Length: 267
Image 1: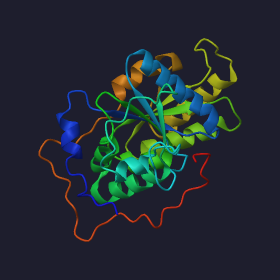
Image 2: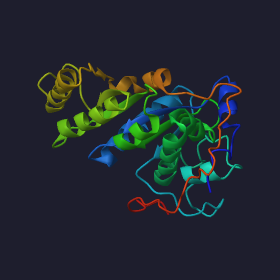
Image 3: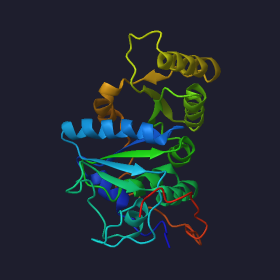
């Protein structure tokens, strides 16, 4: 059972923090594993800047129940349901940053966004995390669009050197822009002066299509600058102080219909 009134202090906690947690969405690609390297690069850059980074992997499913010290991975769903879980952000002793599976939790937050608005869903997403934490949310463009629609958030779209890279990147860009978000391109392993490199040709093609068909001049963020840019652009949209998360009569989030693909190794 996940009612909107479960944690009405979530927005207030975020709003009163001097250095609230923030989230930076990154869209998945046709090769999720390769794009995941980009996320780890961003997390490493954030750590070097003195910021704790948490990766939420929207392609991985949470285990049914999290028990401390049993070896199971803490997932986003567990953090949403268990009010005792909070101040997340510090890495595990054996890792440089915390990684959380989040497929089911993101489905729940999409239901929250549809029923109560994107700002409420965002407040719930950030509530379990400690001040100063940067949450890197790795999820399909359609999921990000449904969750943050209308918030004018910037979203990183990785561009890989792979077959159909133009279709992959432009498809994500189109979905995100259509939801009122501001996607930016992050070409991987690409030097700006390599004018004839295949990846640069893909980037130019995506930029041309975006400007021609969407009237949207998309930005490009070099990988070496992502840590700094994420800190500047990450989304923090808490509810204003005094705002209550109103529970709509008879409205609940239903977990029984959740169905995501395979567990992707989170066991």
